Amino acid sequence: MPKSLRSPRHQRFLAQLVSLRKAKGLTQEQLADKLGRPQSFVAKYEGAERRLDVIEFLDITAAIDADPCEILSSLGS
Image (cartoon, rainbow, N blue to C red; front, top):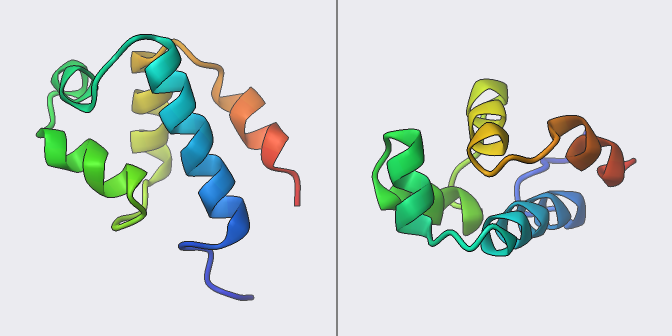
């Protein structure tokens, strides 16, 4: 299995998260505040410098009021 970090599917995943954040009118700083994390946390996962675990992903989707199942199902294989 090839590494997923920076793969085309991973890039689509991150692009969706960035797009949803921006659609909600949130800056990285505002999202980070909602998550109780530093702004660099958001910058690093959006820039593919770090991976998200499942719990972090769920926290992010809750903070931006997005359906995690829709995001994952859109990635397909």
